[in-house]
Image 1: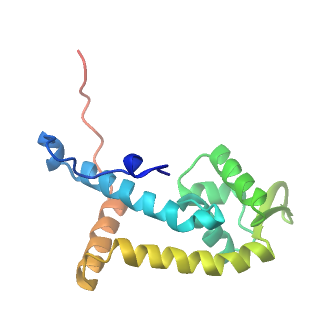
Image 2: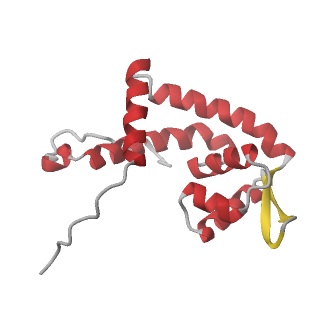
Length: 166
């Protein structure tokens, strides 16, 4: 999170040439993601919630008994990353690990009462953030962008060519 206005990410710096970077979809997505991330962090600062923490809380709230390994897979992170994520949510009093009834080696996850209660306010703050950052697009543009991003994320891409230093 930026500590001052000088630390805030600026998508286009005046007087700087971006060259071919301006032609890359990935570059445009990353610049947008940085701006949205900063706003998300500022919006959720009262709860200490980051995008991965929010996602984990939503998944666990909707899938009681979800295992740590399942959470890691759903979120596309390593199991060790999921452990760190759950540790942080436990420290905030939002989540607990419980022995999985069907597998003594695994843990099931559930929100605490505090986690379930705060998730209501956190969700409202996330929805307000999302409305604010997407407000420059009309409803049809928002729907189209979501559809196109979903198409990209669900696509099977050919493997990259074998190129590089010779």
